[in-house]
Length: 116
Image (cartoon, rainbow, N blue to C red; front, side, top):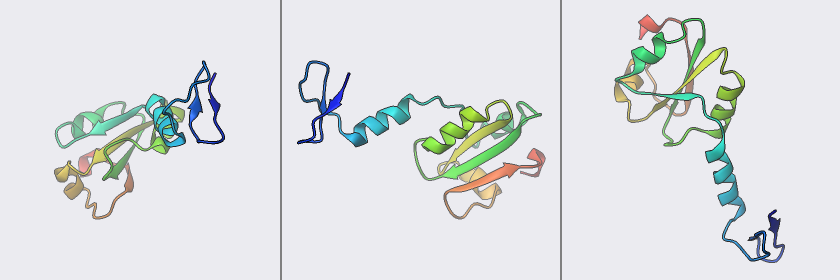
């Protein structure tokens, strides 16, 4: 059991000693532990992503961030049976150009995979 030390903002461990966890560190740890059903989509694996599970809707998030946003992780878990969530990082320049993305973040639903 962990408790907050109201004076320092640090966490008291099971033995009552001050730990180095801050609220920010705990939040980041929680995000890292979240289930993640998001596919990382790159220039080289786009067709594989777009072709898998043809009965599922495809939703791409174009982002400058290096990690999957927590909200996207949560949505990917909640809708994993009906939507394939894909994350396109800024390094996928070919895809960004093909989709005409000029601002980040940008979410796009794929209607026809062959258009791109």
